[in-house]
Length: 272
Image (cartoon, rainbow, N blue to C red; front, side):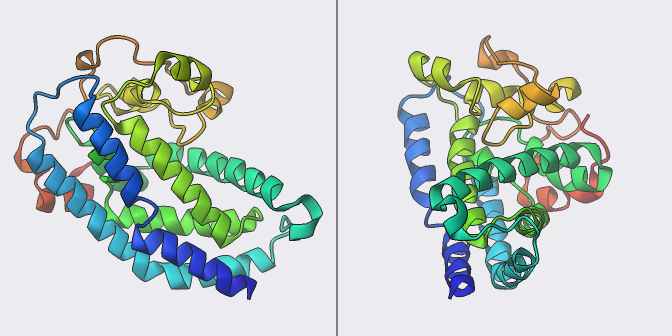
């Protein structure tokens, strides 16, 4: 029954997009009516490409989910770090899972930048010449498969159930939607969370076209991993327009077409 419940939880969460849709719509409306900056670049063609990639990634993930969930549960049953629910309580175990999974995601994100084969997939996300809520879901479908597989299997090895992986995925998505959006957090909120959570000012540095800034601020939910491990480049305090987003070699309109984006792993070699 536990395995069945886990399967249903992760499948319904990741394949239907029900947890992502309302959050994406809310942040998009926030960005539309109260943007921090008015983006001068045409956004329609970018949004068509970005959301087309999202649909393709979602479809691939949905096809993968049943087998991945089965594998996750099998690995979890054999994990030396598996906790029985009664030992520490549901909520404490969920907190543990979110911290462990975010640390794992930080390591995976750094690996995406360090290893050429992984960078070939992840570079599509960084090739967006602007930055808004749609950039959040701009990932190559193959990257979505790699990420889901590693997070599910490695997470299970660390004692996290498929349901906890799904809960973390929702948390990460919400934080990343805000982090990519052209919005400004209220000053009191920014001051309260900027050392703990990934914020728009923190994540904008990661999308800079400058390699030294791209290879920093890897945090997905929690920003303190970068502070602890020396990969933080601080906050984008100045005008957002001062940051050039994207990759220097892929800025023309042709390279932003959907067909070319899907072929980007064939053409990309380095982040510059």
